[in-house]
Length: 480
Image (cartoon, rainbow, N blue to C red):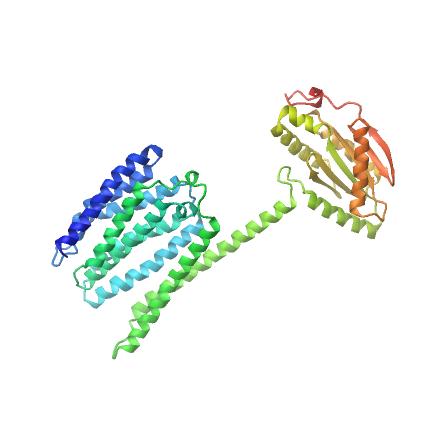
């Protein structure tokens, strides 16, 4: 390798040292300790550059532990920096990302075998020297595995994150090509140095940019695009061992008197088996996630997000099923609409948070009063729908009285009850219950009205709401 190439390489490392100094000064005050770790790794790598590239010079001394300590330490700190960066940027390490990282590492490890171990075996390199040629590519492989795990919408939306990906990738291919040249007994050429310089420049640019943080990037790349990109990358990488296996078999058949290298076939086949296992695990996780999301969406579609009761759509569906069942069995069916009294005044005086808490606690208390064949749903705002199957009107009134007694914080509600006449639709039945509720409101609130056909007659009237318990909670007694 020429002195000019080594000089350019040393200059690129100097650039990373300067960028590390500037970047840490800019970002350390904003919890940039992950950036500081990355800078420390680059400094160690720069210090070990001469040692590392001395190994690439023709006729250089054999590497030993002392000559490798700085570069190896630099790589390990790179990995620590990426782990810290993942936590710092708001990413969460999931099993899916770990499987993706393992997938990438297996593919690249296969490349290491083909590009470094095979030439070393063919060139008669002593087995004890092969791990030295593999050392840096394998460390880079670990680095790329960490990069794959941390890839997320935050990183894809960050220029610094993309520069880290470019830097780690070019570093791997630089060390891989250098290891191949050494294993083949060739001098390390310009392409290897060019890739190393590109990696240093990318690291320097990343250090000067803003660290990617979820709170700093409200407009990050959408998560669905990130997933598609990850899967596309994994698909392309998954083809690599297959292509290498085909090339190995074809080469052996084309070259006269050449035998198929069984060890190569075993290694490539083994890597494909591992990749298939990882891919199946990844697909299983995706299916499990999809099923979980589907279940959550179905639950959200049926339930009210605040009270966790069935929502209006579920309440209407339950009423429709109850009407169909009553039409067959001839059982009595009653529907009640419940409305918390003076709820708007309560919200205005005590705030919407207190109003929401009243709705939630009321729903929980009322739900505990119900038995078999009785369904309570939130119908909208402070209004609730109660469906009572196979119950006479007097029993429905008793259920409503019991619910009124359990209404929290000394509050009260009005109720309108309609008994199904055997012919009307669900809409007509609810409309009659709504008319009865209106009559209860007009009669002074805190009472229940029952509708038989077109008539609305009082079942019970509550003159005053109960006093507030000694809990410091607001009561309607406080309202004007």
